[in-house]
Length: 310
Image (cartoon, rainbow, N blue to C red; front, side, top):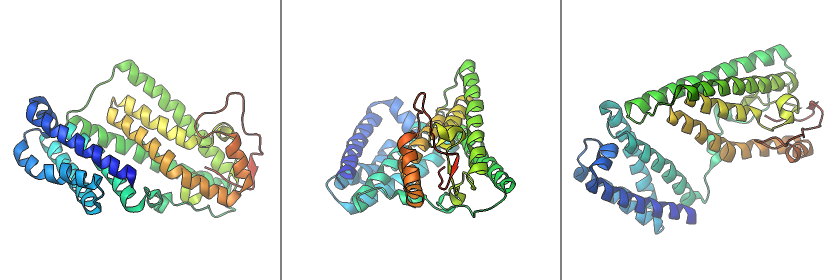
């Protein structure tokens, strides 16, 4: 609760300073509110954003709910306004950041923690694959998963973000050589992802998808060097796509995704693996790092022992 209240205190102070800047600086007004009348907006926003955040900082749970709801409403409305008018793009980004912070702070005040288990549902719910399927079926299922997930997260979402970035007037083109370097990283990261997916589907009796997890511990291919090569691949792919598109929003999307995965998803995944596979996974976790391989070392366990990891 203490950290939630601290966040709302910081948000109240930042909101007050922002409103001062809006009335003092025409540039801040233009970048964050566009053609909106600051007086009319301030009449509602100051009490519901600045005032309610200050009350939440003093421990008021209803005020935390009010300011969080208002922040989400403003973010959505301002995004629609910016998309239609091409104004106030930076205001959308600031309010989007405030929305994420407010939601987290509200959870801390109401529950004492951020309930990360809420994001594990549907295809992201941890379930082992039905054992005994033919390798060809596992490979085909993995290929379909890769096609769907890469298409959604590396094509559709980045292109949508790029369109918004340009529409909101926050696009910053990158030099051609930087984009070329991004293409090289994308090729290497994709090769890593395919290598990891192949090892998972052929040796683990499962797929990379959480809802069809492997039935055996895979310590072959890239899993000898890092515990989660699929995650490493996905993050590098996202950053590379952002660089290729010359979109800093896509790069941020990939980096934020890495934080969500590392701090919200990975603890649940590894707890599930430790519960199902016990000492075999604990030894593997102790020997192999999650992100950065130990130079000159790799996992020495058999490639397909009776346990599993993604």
